[in-house]
Image (cartoon, rainbow, N blue to C red; front, side, top):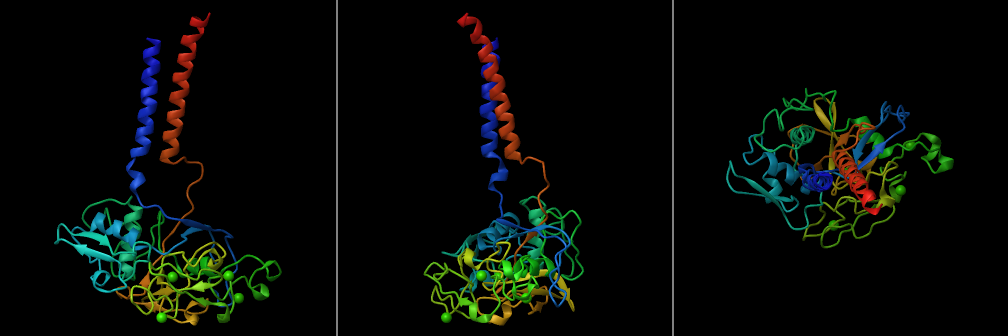
Length: 354
Ligand SMILES: [Ca+2]
Ligand SMILES: [Ca+2]
Ligand SMILES: [Ca+2]
Ligand SMILES: [Ca+2]
C-alpha cells in the first residue's frame, strides 16, 4: 500500500515534468528585454526623454520570424491587411504568403527571419501588440485577437494604451530614453556636458564616430564594433545596394546605455506619440543619413503608410515581482512530489533494515 502510494507519486512527478515540457506556452514568442531604469530622469535640452516609471523595451526590432508567427496565427483570412504584399514582392521584404483567403499561410525568405519586419503600418504594429497582450491566440482578426486588448483599433490616431497593457508601443519619450539617455556624468564616461543624453543611440556624440555597417552574404553586419549602424545604403547583400541587416549584429559595442541595438538605423521605428495626426517614426534606416539618428531629429508618418524601411520595436511593463512563472510552479510541484515519494520510500525501508 505504501509502496503503491510512493510509486503513484513518482508517476505524478514524472507527469508534472511532462506537463512542464509540453506546455503550449513554450511555443509562444519570447522577447529579449532590457530594463530601462532611472525613473524620473531628466529630459534633454528640448524637453524630450523623461519617463516617470521603469519599463522594459525589446533589445531588438521586431523580426520577420516574430511577425510570421503572428501572421500564421491570425491571418489565414487577412481581414485587415496585416500582411503587406510588398513583404513578398519586394526584395527587401522577408515574408511570402501562399494559399488563398481562408487558408493563407506565411513563410520566410532565405536569410530573412532575423531581419526586422518592414512594410508594416502603425495599425499593424498595434495589432501585433494586441495579439501579444491577448496571449498570442489563433483565429480570426477580432476583438479577442488583434482588434482590441491594448489598443481599440480605430483610425490610427485616437487609440490610447490600455492601463493594464502587458505590451505596448513606446511613446516618443520612452523610445528616446532607451536610445539616448545615460545617467552617468561625463567624468564617469557619460555624455559630454553632463546633460545625460547622447546625440546618437550608440553612446556617442558625433557623426565622425559613426561607422556605416557593411554586410556579409547572409545579411549579418560584417564589421561589428564601436558605433556601427546600418545607414547610408552601406549594407549591400542579396544583390541590393543597401538592405536590412540581422538585428543586433552590430555587436554590443554599438548598444545604447540600457543595451538596445539598432535604435539607430536598420528600420525606423513607430512610436505611439503623435504630432499633427502623424506618429513619430524614429532612428533612421538602412538608406538614411547620419542626422536621422540624432536625438534632436524627428520624423512622423501617417499611420497607414507602408515603407520598405519602416518597422517597430515593442515595450512592456516590468514583470510583476514574486509570482513564479508556470515552469517554476511546475518545478516546485515536481520537487514536492518527489520529496514526498522519497519520504514514503524511506519510511518503508527503515523497518526492513531493522
Ligand atoms: Ca547631449
Ligand atoms: Ca558607443
Ligand atoms: Ca551600398
Ligand atoms: Ca532601428
